[in-house]
Length: 168
Ligand SMILES: [Mg+2]
Image (cartoon, rainbow, N blue to C red; front, top):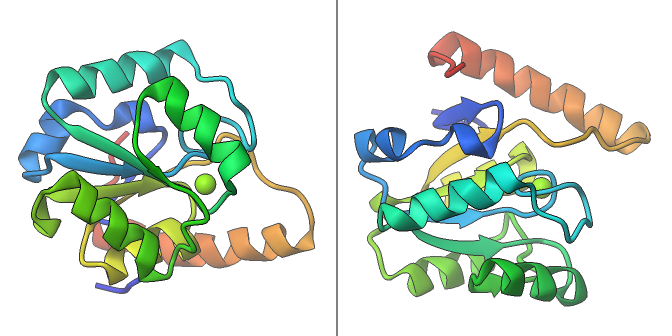
């Protein structure tokens, strides 16, 4: 499988159910923040996401955060959710992911990365030997760079659709 291909692709993080995780023998999650848990740079969290986090914890799923955003953005957000975090995670480079894996104290095969970006979250997770789950972003970023990036991502997702069955 290509390093650009997620193991799963879902419309939003709340579609990741305990049953789904169980099916893939996953017991820990490394979460992206921006456009995965909430809107870009927002400190607000939707009730559906809060309920999802509670549901995961009730099932004994370990949760931690790796964000490429900076400490002033990540620290209060992670504190609100009561999670450990790595800020300035440099995804797709391995440093942040490795730190998070060590914190979760689980074998790599039991950990999934959840994020909205192929070139950071998915490539970083695949390169670290983790299970990868791509979510659709809360909102599309503007500007020519992001337009180009989304087109390239769409190319990789066509490959995904051919090779995997999409969930909802
Ligand atoms: Mg993101």
